[in-house]
Image 1 (cartoon, rainbow, N blue to C red):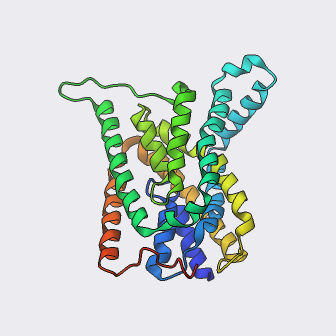
Image 2: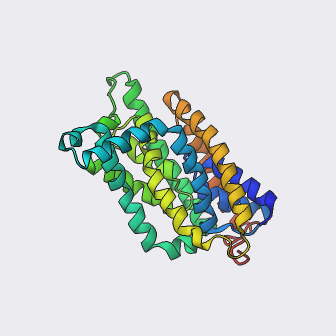
Image 3: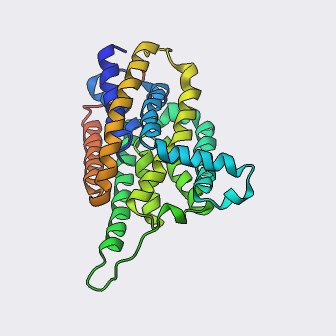
Length: 290
């Protein structure tokens, strides 16, 4: 991998990690369209450490408060009813599904799941799911001629059941094209949470999963055509760009719909099918060389 490739892929990772359009799919597609080798699951997981570092800094006050309350609750029973202490446990509980399934399906994630036909399918299907979830949220928020405005849930109403559902939604992102934020936010909207609450928990929930995945994949970095230097460079780029995207996205969702992302996902998925069907793009582009 050249330095230019690592710059572009780091830029793509930072731009797409927090948007509901799937960063792993876009890394795969960028390489396929450019005629580069597939960067692989290890490269994707490690560069995500950069974007998660951006999450740690952006949400540093929330994270520090949650960690402080959680550690105190281990020895102080009166703290166990504290919302921040409970959030600590809920992030742990919500991280279990992706940890178990990630290990169970590691070979598939690094192989068959990177087929461009599967990515095209997940882009379209999860795009439609996100669109339906977004419309339900909008209907509750605005009401209608024969409907009263329905108040949606905040994170203070999050419990173990919903935390696990969020976790299983996040685990769906093991398949490129699904999108970690897209799946968890969709799940949260279907369960009645506000856009801001679903997105905030999605970002917090991703921290242990992404950091653990990145550390686990460190042993595979530098193998094949991807060396350590470009991987680290891409990770730094992803961090800088990712921080800016988080700041923009958290403001965007307070007033805007997810429909632009829904339309983009569906159109991109259809374009992929057309290119593959016409023989312009191989569903395994870059894989053999990578």
